[in-house]
Length: 242
Image (cartoon, rainbow, N blue to C red):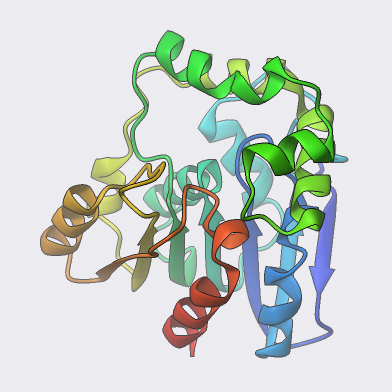
């Protein structure tokens, strides 16, 4: 296991775990973490293995990512996972159905196409200079601080970590794990007109299969919901967690 570098927000309260996406880091929660702390949570946000200030090991399977996170604590009120953070959360809840009392999945990576197709799609940010200006140009709705943090996070993790994560998890499909969730879950999809990993038909289908799942989509947001539409997301998130 890897000892993960962590950021914390708040001094006390119900424990909440934030899991970032692939090619990001804990600093990327710079607005979400303080907002949750203000709402009464003690927030822990780790840098996942191979990301931020955490070590770069050889194994990037979801099971290995989950082992690191499990070692942080076992007394969570809620877990919030974005993209692969959601995949890691599903891996944890499959092992321990009550790993936390509630779960929030922000456009999680439930299914990926073939490794080559997925890697090709996710290499795009590395094809240009990793600068805040370039990230801002590609994501004009983001706050400048999000662009700065994302550019640094991409440098820290590298294209290699992205590629290995996909290659070490062949046949990536966590729909079954999602359908078996045993705790109240908020599944948040991006705007289907933009880049969304969880389109409405998939999200609504899971909600029909499992009454514990509530599915919503955030209009105007692509995959990085907490960067694109921070205020609407937080209103939805805090209502669910209240």
